[in-house]
Image (cartoon, rainbow, N blue to C red; front, side, top):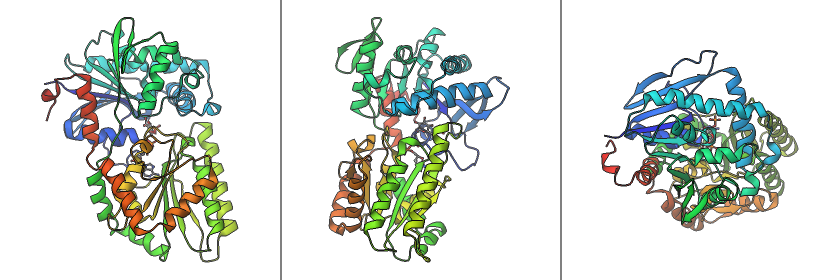
Length: 460
Ligand code: ADP
Ligand code: G6P
């Protein structure tokens, strides 16, 4: 029976800690917990060890992880992955900081992943590599004689060829990732941009719809939007709305409508723009007439842009509260720390407006979670950036351009004033788009495309 082998930089090894905020871990955990298999990646620890992978078994999943050295963490994770690829892939080139040695270390760590993974592989494993940290891995696996079905999935956007070209080293990394058999993307735009880049400057040839060839080998390109377990999330939200944290929050609102943002503290999430929109909303509405809660989990704090962003939003939040606050009320509550995901589900159900306004986002699972968390009889309204992958599926949300503060403020006000009838109608259409999907379905669709006809042999 063939086994699923997932490879990703971030591995949520179950250790009873608060859990990692991040869409990749959320999407894959749902699949792996149900299907079992091997999950290989970084332990999250930085040590000088560099020994063989440590393996933990939990409920049918083997988690095999290696530590990174300080220099690897700096060059591969902080430097090239999050200082170059992440901003380039999200079309924020001004946030890139490139150092030649970081690219070398990125390649070296990808090779070290391959060296440590290969001895754990079985002949008929289905290998599924994830995200921008591991673009060189499919090539490194082939070089080490791995011939079996290998897939790659990009959780983040892929920009147009001109925008991709700004990242030094990208050409050969595109060639490396093309050593996979199937490449998956969140949206058709990402797939088409990648194909144009592969053809435009990585030497690939387009041979059919959704197929490119490199050196005579066909590579398939597909669209597989990441999904959440919507009915389960809905049940959690309904139960959590009655639990202590949600009760305390509800009581503190004194009947005021709640606006809610939930993000990693990341430059792609559009937090300064969102606070500017909030400032305009607060300025035009009566004092004490709303409360916004923004939860922003610190992330990648070794990257300078993330530290600067923290200062920027702390200052913007302080400015809003000092300008518009009253002795007995402040418009904004900003929490720079992660919250338990179940607790957040309860908060989402309380919120009259879900504010999800990234500058650019591969999918944005928070948007889907917000829809799932609503009470169908009295749902809130999702204000969603049109530059999130989720906008392709949630077209009945109020779609906004995060660069247009006035437009966002208008949308938030429209959400606050929307009739119950319109809220229900919009919510029903959004719910219909996510209700039948699941992380497991998402994963199996990819794996089915990776090796057609083999699905029946997947572990049940
Ligand atoms: P990204 O993958 O860029 O972080 P997504 O919206 O796709 O963005 O996924 C984020 C996941 O992490 C969601 O499941 C969300 O609920 C969770 N999350 C994000 N920020 C927080 C936070 N501040 N506290 C708790 N959970 C969070
Ligand atoms: C996004 C990326 C993931 C990453 C996650 C959290 O979802 O696509 O690859 O794991 O953010 O970021 P971190 O750097 O903490 O792993």
